[in-house]
Image 1 (cartoon, rainbow, N blue to C red):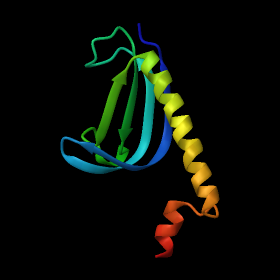
Image 2: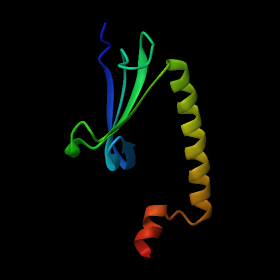
Image 3: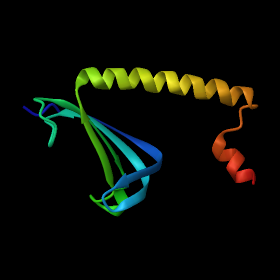
Image 4: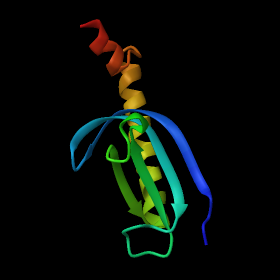
Length: 100
């Protein structure tokens, strides 16, 4: 059964596919039947560049439990990064790069 659970967000960064690195424009997170993982249902995370077509895709299919652990790890890493940035005066890495 298809779940229709899909979240799409803008994302900035880089991803690597079989064709090499590409600029990431969006992240797509869904809960549905996986294409490759041997699971009944999976959280799928796709980092894509919609302008470059289906080849510009870096994807993972993980269990719900793994996704929960990943969400926790992301939250902790974000909190740590925000703490470091606040100690640096709040200027983001991108802003510091633009100043050079």
